[in-house]
Length: 92
Image (cartoon, rainbow, N blue to C red; front, side, top):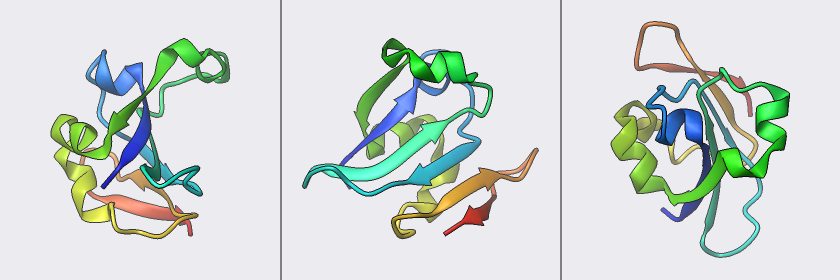
């Protein structure tokens, strides 16, 4: 599927993906997906050390609930329905 960006809240601290957004890919190996726990502050997001590039498959292993949504088009923003593995479309 390609690369993505995920915050340490998801990959290091083990929080579930709550917000997922698919932006325009910047190259052929970029999926455009970005994954957040929803607990990140703007200050946290502004520090590049708190996010890394991963293969989308790696994030799917952390949180399999994202898998049904990975084919959604660029411009899609999804937010997890609290207490479930389902996501609602916020935009896109």
